[in-house]
Length: 198
Image (cartoon, helix red, strand yellow):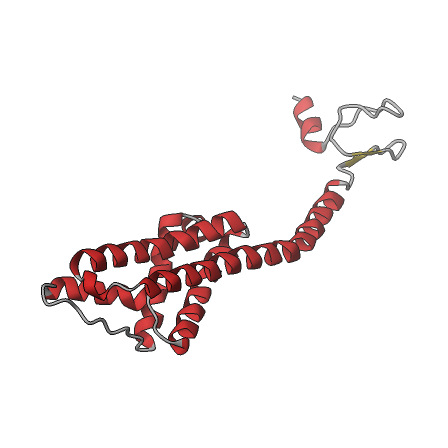
């Protein structure tokens, strides 16, 4: 339960998503090569190139790859929260964070490489993430409902069991009363009997 509480922290979840993305991108050796302006320093190139690998694609294969890894990463908040609002806000926060810094660095340090297609691709990928987050959250919630109802039913059935039975008339009680309301017999347990002797 403690692990679930930690995972439900949005910042922790975003960090985990980022780590999973990093493992998948570099594990599959995905790279989007950028042609930098001559004025862009080596440090700036490294940062922009690093961020570009998370958010930019140039062909259909790149789009499929990026779509799949972002969908996989988007599943984590969906499974943890079972709430589409929390799921898509966490997914969009991760997505926005990476895109924001990519575009800020690119436009500031290598504006000649900036292309309007990047924005279109970003909007497309962002839309896919929103649809997946909302759709899967609602589907999981729909399947979770019968399970929760069954659990609640079992709880109600267990709660419905008698806590005490009058030894005189057999009346069942949902609580532990002092006297039977049916035959007025005093109802005390062994502990109370033992204490009353002293």
